[in-house]
Length: 128
Image (tube, rainbow, N blue to C red; front, top):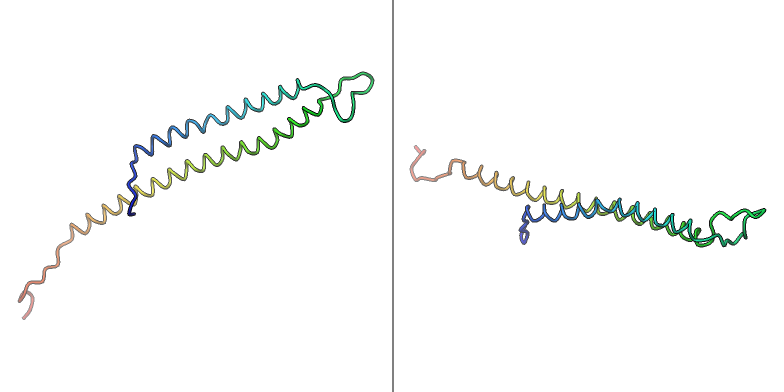
């Protein structure tokens, strides 16, 4: 492939570094969820439906509801980012492997051609 000059060691380093960063997404997503849950439970109890019945405390409020809805959408986005990162890393591994295998195949083909007996056309040889 003209213009391609891949360095497997450099690619390996980038994939490892990126993989390490991507693997932390799960930890960050868990902490994100815990912080949102904590914020929602501490957000107060003002709600559109009013307070609880008989002096009971209302379950959550408008802020808690908003945080819950935000978390629902943000969680989908976080899952998508994590899945995209995984697929991108795997794609880079697959592409690099195919490139390197192609190099090996081309080298093997060149070696096979080199080892073939040469076709030499000598005048008068083999003619009667």
